[in-house]
Length: 241
Length: 260
Picture 1 (cartoon, chains in turn brown, blue):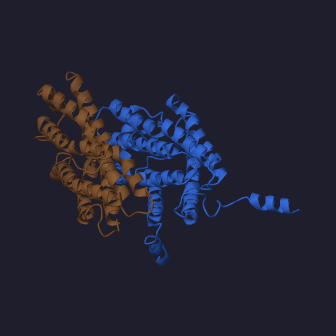
Picture 2 (cartoon, chains in turn purple, orange):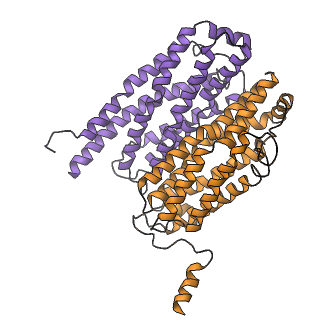
């Protein structure tokens, strides 16, 4: 390859990398557009109140959830960039990389499943309120409690970074601690079924706001550190060439 | 303990950690489903709607706390998959086997345990739902849990073929045949989608009392064999330095026969 020319592989990775900006913008837009998030629909709402929610603002419910259904899973290619960076880590086996790949699909697909329930509830807003309440519950429990793959992903990345024993690691060490903190603040959301009111309920400060803000912060921080990691990989390849 | 700490510092630390997490995960999974949530052995498929409401009421906190724990730790099921995927990559077979196994089992998690956790959490959160709706959640929970068959069927067969054609001696051949038995449990569970009572129902003599012990035996066997594999692995690419253990002494008898 002539000097100064960038390989197709690196161009391809840069294309995926820069999708994080529209992905982030779309996720925030869907979040703000969905009338069920600001404020979040209460788990204490009666079947009649929930049915009424789907009759009002019907268009915004549909548009926002179609948007999230389209691009919620767009996180997967970005997670694959992280998995690719793990090849450069000072590990003896690919086990941690396989762990990341193993949960990379689950996290966004849990979100995708919740959009399916929200869209089903909105499909026939004149349905029996009891059925709408059930579908709404399925959506909220899947969205709020469906975090096992995210928690595992954060902790797999944390361990991979912590065990990257080389003078110039792929990700800086603090990324390991950052991922541990994000995992810990996500844990309470898993128990949202235990409380219908208060900070731990699915509309509460911890289970809703902290968990979702943590996801947003994680995307920005990991995208920022991924850029340095990709530049480092490029330098290592050029040095070895 | 010192020796274990040593394992987590040595060259095979990733493999040993994955092995310990696998043991802990299956242990936790059993405790949650059998003792805490009491969702295993499964509820009776013939309960009428009112009885399913009582079933949920009887397990209120157990279901919420137990499935809350699964919502936190369920993703660690990927660790066992990663270790098994590595074991297949270590075989002389195409990487297609390893990646097929990884993807099959990774997607199995959504219908295989997410659905039951979501359905049962919804059922227990709303004791005032109409009993018919509660019964629907009960059915969704149990049928998705026992009836997610294809991924385990095809996944077990993929692992079986890989073991049987491998020339690197990663796992013993008898475990390949045990994988076939495990795959067959996914075949005989199919009637549980149809029968609400009897030996073929999901809590029946075949559906539960044969299948679950077979799965338990299979799981214990692969956990022990993976430990043995990690001990023998030289982190290289060719045949493992030592062959898998010969539990029936066939190789010894063969050597004696040749010697005679």
